[in-house]
Image (cartoon, rainbow, N blue to C red; front, side):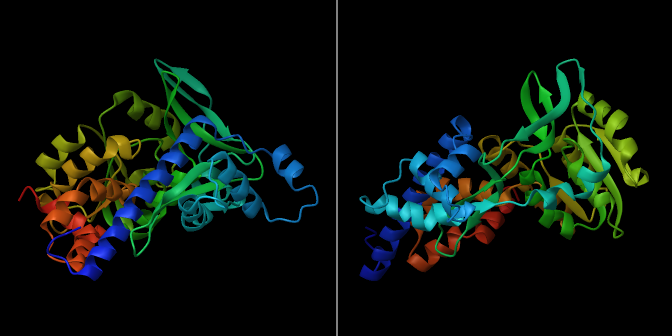
Length: 340
């Protein structure tokens, strides 16, 4: 209870605290399933459970996933909330033709090669294998819904392995989470982080993009890109690659070189991304006319939101102020203003 809040505001606060716990509970259930047993649901299991094909695949997949997450929606009220308010909003059957028709998939051919500690190869999702296919969805009342996708057939995708661990891949997740940024960038574009060149390729196709500058610190990744991927670009003349540390480059060059758009993609996921995100946000003031974009920013802001939750509650004078300070807009402004 907050001693300065009205009874109604304290009730709202208690509900928000419950939502925070549910977000965390559901997230951990999903992470555990995806990390350890993402292939438990198979074509054979789907057919065995629904022999007559009465249920839609999404409904059947969701029911099976609920069981594998150990949710007892019939007898446990909290489990019922997690199933109805989270799981049912999470799951989507995806159409592979949408991704296979993507320009990168159609035009960039990835050979299977190995060099040093790196391997360029292919991996796949099995039929009904679960995976995160896009950034989290944040509702108006701060429910955070992971987006779980599946295909009904195998889906093959290119991947770069470093010491037999996936370093980068062009999966539906990368396509979905970069599309909004790709749609918005224009003019002179700077991207921090190269990966397999998906983002530079897609934006170089845009008529309103005049140049794409890539900053990447790993020389082997640059060599791989220059020798294998860049020659396949339709507009390779737009692309410049710079071997440098992203933050050193930002400090030295952003005040002096005019870019219209900057895309930052320096992390594998939220676990290693939040610190890097905050570090780059603090440098936005170096180029105030530039629009900055960040990969999986909603998920990164989720990490920041709940990290600051207790401080926000203790320093807010009303529930309305708490809501305002938990918003993505406020957190973005807070992150970018702290070094000025």
